[in-house]
Length: 248
Length: 248
DNA sequence: CCCGTTCCTGTGAATTTCCTGAGAAAGCGG
DNA sequence: CCGCTTTCTCAGGAAATTCACAGGAACGGG
Image (cartoon, chains in turn brown, green, orange, red):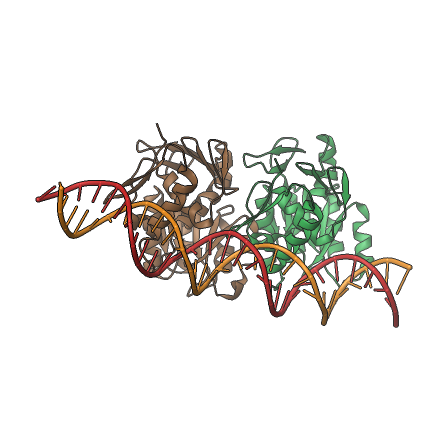
């Protein structure tokens, strides 16, 4: 697995043979599966989806995914069983579990043990994509293809996805969890205008029902922390959205 | 056997020929075997599993594992018989026994006489991984490949996995068993945020059903012992988890 | 230059997340 | 069996974070 930089400046994961990464989405709620598939395709990944455990196993067999997104609550069998079947014939595939927050610790215990990961519903797409990237990065193929990078850089601004640390020009900057996700989304799309709707869709939970101006608010927070007294890197495109780029 | 540092900074055991270590897991409880396999694969090891004694012997024959994790209670034959068969054709392989806590102690004593080791169910994955590492390190191949390292260091904090001793800046620090495992997990993943769920999964027993705030509690304990009056090394990433890193 | 629109940001309150003391229960050594 | 240690639950309180609201600033089309 390697990272390349596309003409647009987006970095995307590729497999060693320079073919796009394949991800299998398993969820019985069709709209959610749809939402996920779209988001993952937007990442440049190849996506297939299944609505139940049996379908998942079948799909895995001929699709040979590099990673799986798996709802732990499925109509026919539970997450662990599906995982078992997948793993039986298909060793190393990393899995990202989707689980309800209130599902009293839905026996998440054990699920993340193997280096797999999980997110609780309702999640933000940014969260899912980030975790998935992490899993793929750390999976066998990534190691085989060389050094995996856990850090995003735009100009003198650096964001480390492992330690959740942010710094600009060497100075450490403290950001909150939401600020971190927003900044990560911006930095993953440098020099590209992102609309408030896009940002809301990616960074906030999919069922967020609040005011649209939280985005403005958090942009404001980030500016205070990142651009304070320096060449601004976060820019407003009135009527369009926001973008981040290195200062001249 | 050598230790190398992967791109992510994790150290992993390799065989003299720089091939991953091979581990055979023998347990008839499929979910447990699954859990173990996942955890061991995550360590970078190659894993095969068997559900009974006969299968174990067969698997060992063509898999030639560097270590075996063996449940002493198997449907077809008991641990001793399996061990006998394994050893008959395959001398030196170190074995980690899994045993129920109430199992008769002296039986185990006999089993571990040859430098093997055991853990009682329910165990924590950290425990199993650590013991297994110890066994492999001490086994023939490790000696052949040179010095094995049993100590973790982050800044001036040192943890010895063999003696279970911890010290910071030369001062010995007493930690309890649970504190030790938590600290070891943190130190094996320096500068990386570990979520409370991940920590719970790795450090606590797999059937632990308690409150998630034991993690907070033990972090608090560790801070009192390790960071007291010094530059803090254990940091909270609110909404994300905890991480350890050397103070500047 | 005016006006409607869009964006920025201070204030404050609700909520979430984390920390930690106190004590019950279980384990261990003598 | 007793006393000490360790593990863990519970609950209160502290602190950080998230978010709504609203007034004012900046912008851009006409």
